Length: 255
Image (tube, rainbow, N blue to C red; front, side, top):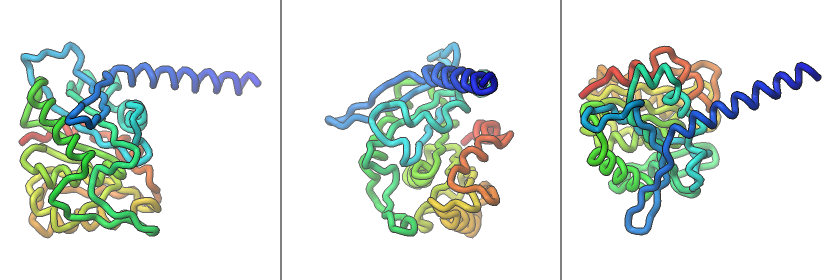
């Protein structure tokens, strides 16, 4: 009983600490012509508008969709609220939340997987993200040479989609367990891209990530990396976030 009580106290403490850290992300909404995109934004400590900071856009997975402006912080937010990381990598970090039935990227879902669509038009959710990004770049102290995007699962697909739509905007990208229509990748052959996937992923097959890497190398990319975690299933973001150079690699990239 004493052991159980100790474990319970530990989990309660950890939960309260996590919640307190998440509160560092301010709750905001972006409204455009009647559409609303909830998002959370983290500013650097001692934020100075006369300075300039990297901007990180984080796209969550399908399980975090909704309109509570909370769930999108479940995976990845603690990386940026960690006190050491905040001190070492001061940045503006944005976590938008996709609507319940929305998608970041144009895809078709099948019983045994996904197909990726090369659509000229972004999805409505991605269009809102693009507008939000434009607003933040205009209003905040953003270093235009250091704008990054990363995402997991549906957000990994969205990461690929966004850099293909705006290849001149981003200094680097990290798509985790995502995928993309291969014919789009020539546009980003110059960009530093780190692709992560679990080798045993049974939700989003690693094949799209492997093929994206092969396609980029075929276009002459010298800045793409593919890191696969053998035996890891869909939650490869945990292994990715645990990489010692995950953030240092990202923030070292400049246009």
